[in-house]
Amino acid sequence: MKIILDIITFPLFIVYLLFVAIRNLLYDIKLLKITKLSCKIISVGNITVGGTGKTPTVIAIAKFLQKKNKSLAILSRGYGRASTGTQIVTNGKTEPASWKNVGDEPVLMAKHLTNIPIVVDENRIRGGKYLINKFNPEIIILDDGFQHRQLHKDVDIVLINSNMSKLKNRILGFTNFREPWKSLKRAHIIFLTKSDYIASSTKLLEKLQSTALPLFKTNINPLLFLLDQRTNKIDIKSFYGKTALLFSGIGDPKTFEKTVTNQNINVLDTINFRDHKNYATSDIQKIKSKLNKTNADIIITTEKDFLKIKEPNLPI
Image 1: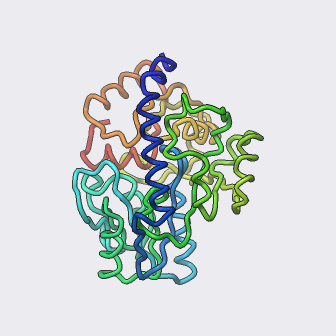
Image 2 (image 1 turned 90 degrees about the vertical axis):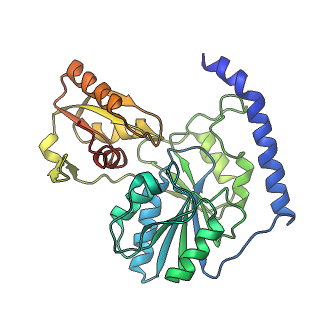
């Protein structure tokens, strides 16, 4: 079935690659304008669709720079939001806006950061200028910004998932790529994420090392507690030996599953929804039905998914 789908979508993918190549060429030869803002821009992005860990990386970089006494702001597109234009997620002190209006990942960032304004805007230049006019940061961290070439970036960080262990010298079947590998020449730094979870293939490492860019491996360090339905913290040790049903709507559910099993929790079954899933009552019923079949002790989901079932108060 997958081969048939690949064959059907292959012509569209070729058109997409042609568009990307022409667009990049126009920027390279300066026929398309690149705008430089009055503050430094650090971009965190990737060349594939989802699953590389952009959100925790943005949070980690923001906390690091904050310790260096840098004034920061974060600019994101706000993927999947119901609104358009410039929207404030938080001014750094206020509670984040509804995830439906600003997107799930910006809200997640806001919950982990303080004193850092976060704005979403599909027009990154407009959003960047808004942040400068209103908050005057020294540095703006641009979430998912590698493909946004119209905005000058002082540092372009590209994340590559270590789970991308099998590379093939063909395009067919790799339609999750946003850009070809050669686009990495625009980057300044590469982060090989989740490197403690799976050994990267020799071919992947050779391909990355051939770029001659600084290459850093990053690991996953899970928190030592879980949140219950009322967001109370419970020590992870309380769940050792328990059985669990997992559900998530993220780009890399396999890593989520491995994170849970590494905590001595026995995963009986998983439900993988599409990334940025907007949950409905029917989805909750599906989860409950699966729970009854597995008779698992607990249900575990990601923090991003948790906030999306908590805000509309879906009855899980």
